[in-house]
Image 1 (cartoon, helix red, strand yellow):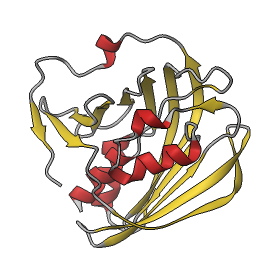
Image 2 (cartoon, one colour; image 1 turned 60 degrees about the horizontal axis):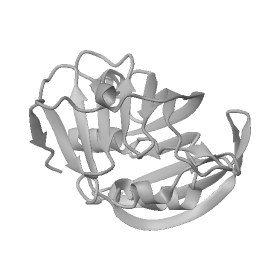
Image 3 (cartoon, one colour; image 1 turned 90 degrees about the horizontal axis):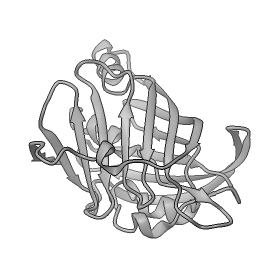
Length: 224
């Protein structure tokens, strides 16, 4: 169960966007509200999910596709931040209670593809957004997973090449399909549903040193 929760939380990340006309990569800060809904009546799972996520995420995006995802109000045992390095295709996870960062290789997919389909438009952030869904199987926990995304048309733009090697949870397929940042994402499993919905977009230049992983931070490879 714990491995499934960790993979699920690692999976929900954000892709850089840009002005549609210029095709230049967006750089700035995006804020999402987070809604976690347990599906079984188990106080332990509810506590773990609440501690890990909090209800607000702030994502600092660099023009090269790298990002730092901060869990603003997660609990003492929750995520402090996730950092994706687009050049290394690696995801670093920092928990508040630990100094060591867990490292995952995003070129390796931890779930198995089953099907995909387009969904009717849904209004998100004041915009009519087409939907896209991937159904998959999680072999680690022997359960089905549904990944749903809603994204804008002819507004912000994302270059799929920045995530061509982000295979885990089919991020490469998602970006290739949307060519835009998702405004809403839903991860649905047997145990819980996690929904991210964008509430603020700020375009501005960022200092890579201030959002990256500290040079001397201890790391540990995440075993799936």
